[in-house]
Image (cartoon, rainbow, N blue to C red; front, side):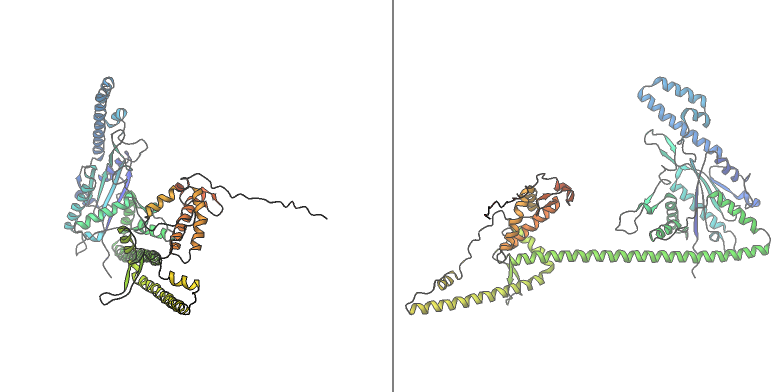
Amino acid sequence: MTEPANLIVLRYERVTYHGVGGIEVHGKRQGGDLSNVDPTRTHLNEFPIGHAGLREIVDAHIVQMQMDNADRKRASLKRRRRRTELEELDNALEVAGDDPHALAEVMGWPWDQKNVHPFTEGILSVSHEWFLNQDGQIDVTKVDTFREFALGYLAEEFGDEVLYARLDLDEKTPHLSFLIAPEHENRKTKRRELSHRQHRLFGMEEVQSLFDDEEPDPALTRKSYELLQDRVADYAQARGLDLVRGERRAAQERVQRQAGEEVTKRKNISPSRGREIAAIEAAEATKDREQAAMEKAAAERDALAASNLREEISQALDEAQASRVAAERELRKAKEERAALAAREETLRIGTQAIITEELTYAPPTAERAEGLTWGRNKPKTAERRAWLSEKIKPARDWLVGFARSIFGFQQQRDAALADQEARAQAIIEAESRQGRKPAQTMLDLVNEAGAAPGKELPIPNAWALPREMTADQIDKHLAAMTNTSICDAYAPTRDARDLTEHSDMQARYTAGLHHLLKEAERRGLNVELREHHPAKATDPKRARLHADSPPMAIHVVRYDRTLQRS
C-alpha cells in the first residue's frame, strides 16, 4: 500500500474588530484554552510579520486607511472648491488625532456598516508526520522549510494585506496563524475599505460544467475557500514540496448531487474550533505513557483508515473522470456520425437531382480513365454553380456514379428501342412507296420526328419552377419579397405542375420550388391549404411579421334549386 499523502491544512475564519483582542491574548499565551500548549517551548514561537501587540497593529492600519480616505476627500473638496467644508474637515481631523474611534466620528470606519467581520484569521499547517525525522521527533530543517513556504505563499497571495503572522512551535504540530485585512477600493466613493465579499480572492467564484461541451451550471459553483485550497497546493507543488491539498469534499458533494445521491453536508472546522479540538485531544493524550502508546496505535490505525478512504475517493474520482471522458468521446462520435449522415443525405439529394435534370451524366470508362461523372446537356452555366456542385457530390461520388450508370443504361435501352422502331417504320414506308401506296401519316410522323430536338414545353401559369442558377441567398430574398397571398396563389399551380411533369426535366425544378414555398409558409405560420395566416404558429416570428396581408378566402356559393314541378 502506498504511503499516505502529506496534506496541507488551510483554514479561514472571519473576525470582528473586537475579536482581534482574543487572537492577541492567545498569541501571548495569556488566556484561552492553553491545555495543548507546552510552556517550556513557548519561547520558540516567532512573529515573522508584525509583533505580539496585534491590537496596536490593527489600530495603526485602520488609522492609516482613515487618513488616506481623508486625503482623498480633501482632494475632492479642493477640486470642487468647497473651502468651508475643507476647513471643517481639517479641524475635525486635527482634534481626532491618531485615535481610530475619534477618526471614525469624522471619516467613519473603513468598512461597510453591515460588515461586522472586516478581518480574516487564517491557520496554515501540514500533516504532523511531514515534520518528523527518522526518530519520530520534530525536524528543525522541516520547520525552516515550512516557514519559508508559508511566508512565501502569504506574500505572493496577499502581500501587504497580511498584518500579523505568528509561528507557533509550542504545540503538537507547528503551524502559522495570521490575520488579513482584505482590502478593496470602493468603485463609487474611491475609498479604501475592508470587504470580504468584494476582495479579489475571498470574493472569487468559479462556475463549472459537468462536461466540457456543456454550458456552465450555477449548481457547480466553486467558492473562494475551495479555490484557495487549490492555489496553496499549486504553490507547494511549484516549489517541489511533497504536499497536496486536503480532501476535496466540496467537489465530491457536487458529483454526488449531479448523480442524484443524498449529500450530508459537513461544516469546515474554524481555527478557533480547531484549537478547541486540539486541546481536548491533547488533554486526553497526557494520562500516562501506556495510554499514550495506545492512543498512538489508534492514531496510526485512523491514519491508515483515512489513507484507505482517500485512496477510495481518489479511485472513485478517477472512475468518474474516466466515465466523463468516455461519455464525451461517445458524444463526439455521435455528433460526427450525425454530421456525416446529414452530409451524405444532402449529397445524395443534390447529386440525384443533378443527374435527373441532366446537369451531370454518366461518363463510361475508356482506355485512359475509369468511369465517372461528366457534365450533361443541362450543364450549369456559371463557374460558381459548377464548383459548388462538384464539391457537394464528393462524399457520395461512388454511389452517384453507380446511379448515373443505371440511368445511362436505361437511356441506352430506350434509344436502342426507339432506333429499332424507327428502322421498322422506315422499312414499312419504303415498302409502301415501292408498291405505289402512300404511307400512313403515323409512320411518317414517327420517321420525320425521330432524332428531332424536343419541343419547347409550355409553362404552367403561376407555377414556380426554381431556376437552376439561383443561389440560397437569392432564393431567400425572392421568398421574402412574396406576400402571403402570392405564396398561396403559387402553391396549388406549383403542386399541379410537379404532378403533371412526371416525365419531364421540369419536374425537379417544380419540386424544388414547391419545397421552398412550403418551407416559407411554415416560417410565417401560413396555412396554404386553408389560406389562413396564424403568426403565433410561425417558426420564425420575424418572418411572420414581414407581411401582414391575409390571403382572400375562397368564395363559397350556395345554390338553391328553384325548379317548379307540377303535381
